[in-house]
Image (tube, rainbow, N blue to C red; front, side, top):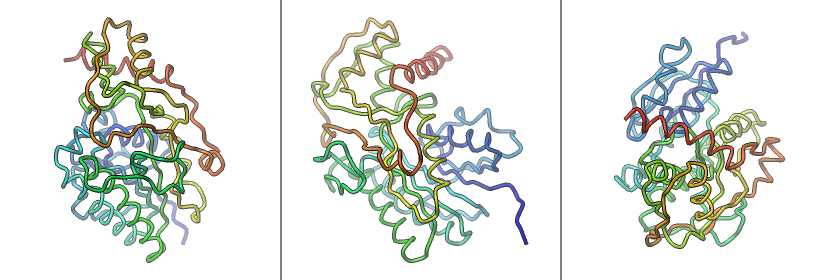
Length: 318
């Protein structure tokens, strides 16, 4: 008998920065959305406008514990993703990546759901290959202060591919590079949110190191489009696949752009570089271009112009 029910999609970390944008997009596409979050870094403010939507359900839950729901697709985004947050309780960070993956993969196995893993460019560590390609195994310190996140995400990828080999699950693994946009946590310590908040306050812009280290910044709408596109690829295509904007900027260049766009009087100050901070980060997105027909459309200045008003409003409301 043919099944005509609306597709039921579970988003873990659904009240977080990326998760909230994904929930909104999935609702726009006509899906039933179950948003799961323990609200450690996620915020009800990010999804408040979705509450009351007939196809939206919010569930407070920590995915380190099993979850029993009936579902067709899973997007596993839950995990603190900034050093300030993931280093606050590093053991819990690793548990979220590893136990969380096991629990969500178990749910996918039981319900025969397709499952997406939000992995990270941090699986490449401080890379010795530049730009980073998917078949590069990385250069990661397994015992440093960032390891709880980096190695947790690497282990989650291992689990996803083992569940594929052992149980024939339909998996999709995306490696996410630096992303920014509205709904970022204002105190997450990430470079874009840090710089914007400091510039709007007229405070010194803090650069760690000399600012020559590079990052590639993807606007959130482009990234969500990549997620959706990956989930509709043939079942045989698993990933991992790089999702990010390949245009590379130094941290100093980013600071100067933010100061200019905010008309800020802020000066730049330098602080020592944190341990294991990557020197360079740039995705090779050839695979995404070929398999997803995807390339980011919104470049840095345009994306920052969409992001700065969000932070201005946060400050105004406070």
